[in-house]
Image 1 (cartoon, rainbow, N blue to C red):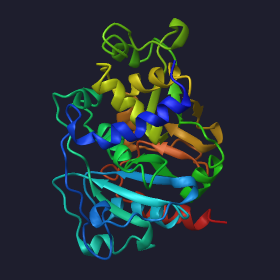
Image 2 (cartoon, rainbow, N blue to C red):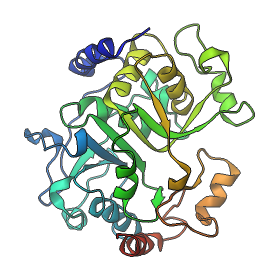
Image 3 (cartoon, rainbow, N blue to C red):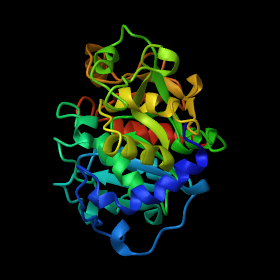
Length: 319
């Protein structure tokens, strides 16, 4: 069994050799304009609460709905640094990023390159994209500035100041905070059959129960877990879909702990590409809509008014 000490000793080793790990390609990281700095500028930004960072995952930083929602996140994240992990083929304009305030709390980062045929590529997939693998790789490289990070997809909507969510778990030292699914009749059962912790061990939960799957659009992960994922994929020959692999890896590590997002912070949180998910893209909110709740998916493509709505919820629920 792993111990906390052995886990921490692996963190620096995995990080230092990151560029040579199978399937990981070195990538330049640069800012996108304005006064924003990137991780390559040399100086390490001051850490927020216990080194807690925010990673916002998006393909592009555009004017309108998506930019307004990101601005609401930056404005209400408290003292936490917000890293915008944008698509590799996208360069945000200075005019767009200037709308993100306070500027000192924002960094623009090009998503790390993920080779589709590598273990990291299989961790995501062509159909759902490689943003989860990119997030884990980024967190590995951010060990000096981010002890842990919230990952937020750009179609997650929070009805209030984001700090209300982050602060509610600031004293929780769990390595993973997320929603989970634990039932063999869900679509994740199909992922279980192709998910392995090593060459022979399937991704079943501890004590040979059915699979515990993590709902990944919104979660908090420690740097130690990112290191464990890297070790499993690159040295233990683990493979599998990210939402199927994560919880079993944590369950089998003696040092790892997983806590659940509490009901008072969740509205409708739908993962995957199910018919229910597609319906939520057009009608993202159940009725009634409750304050300080997370909803997913709520896509700007389905409702461009969500940007203005994010500002409204923030203004009405900031006290």
